[in-house]
Image (tube, rainbow, N blue to C red; front, side, top):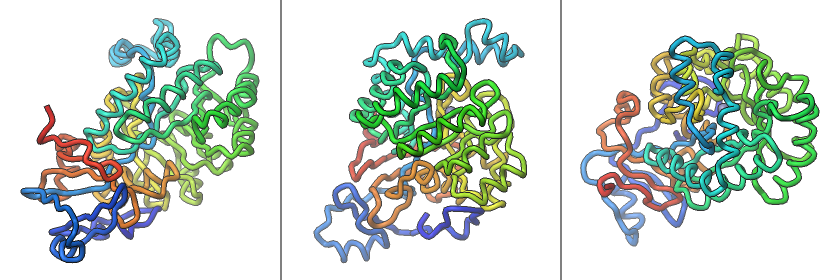
Amino acid sequence: MTGLALKGAISDHELEVLAEGGIVIENNLILATGNFDELKSEYPEADIQLLKGNHVCLPGFVDAHTHICFGGSRAKDYAMRNAGKSYLEIAHAGGGIWDTVTETRKASIEELTKNTIKRANRHLNNGTTTLEVKSGYGLTIDEELKMLRAIKEANEKALPELIATCLAAHMLPKDFKGSEKEYLKMISEELFPVLKEENLTHRIDAFIEQSAFSADDIQAYFTKASELDFDITVHADQFSTNGSKVAVDHKAISADHLEASTDTEIELLANSDTIAVALPGASIGLGYNFTPARKLLDAGAALAIASDHNPGSAPMGDLLTQASILGTFEKLTNAEVLAGITFRAAAALKLEDRGKLEAGLLADLAVFHSDNYQDILYNQGNLKPCMIWKNGELVFDRHKAP
Ligand SMILES: [Zn+2]
């Protein structure tokens, strides 16, 4: 990934593949990369771990958008949707986001923590060493705090690093007596200060959609978040446009979804510093069109790819499978897909210390048993990494796994 641009299309010729390579790790960081024999003579004191057979080492993956802290299951919604039931019919049968809110409120903080760790560690086994995790199934001050405290606690014990985001603006809770604006005002006045005090997150997200919040609803909320120095990210343009304009206007770090984006929104994003995040897992889960990733890249946008792992629309939660599939439908080069789940995804979380195999960056590595890097996307997620390093430590070794 070294030397690749943050924005725009990338051809596979631009990838710098190091044959007979080696990586020197000191503490949690990459000290040097290069030819194995040269590194060996340069660092004679190094404790050498030589991998037998051919392997490909990539930067550990970054999944910049997940909702893996939740209670319950939405298997029934999935079956109903595939049987042709409408959004409203599913909601009337007790399904939809509100079902997950009800189940998450019922769960104890210990249960939420345990389940988040379990799901995060499963992502690690698939090569993901950094995961963003959102709240947004609590939708009261106390319940949002419960979720964010569970995510903070899970981060202490999970193998990947978890980056928390407050998504209290996921939908207007059914039991709130008041308007969208009144709900958001309450959240910004009563929840934002506690997020700072307890250092629970520095990121604020909102779902801008007809079924959630309008661009007008969210103005004051995002202005307040910016004043308090929170980073902003947006669920934008999933079913209707508007969200990406709000994202760009508020200098959001990322605008995620974009399945409904037209040429206007694509231009807007391409001419901004906001990272466009495609969520193919949601398209696969809903049987819906993919984010126009090819058009975004050709227009010059920075494109990251994330799993959106959540109980409703994206239950699979396998980033590599989903990114590979997005690549086949959208005609993305290997370099573009791999950039989208490494350094471009890190940029969507404003993390400059990972996503490339480069001296000075975190030693987060995903190693695959393979002759050729092209095998990895070719196997569409079925070729799993055999070894994972997180912060310079070997945390997963499939050869030794039970
Ligand atoms: Zn989402």
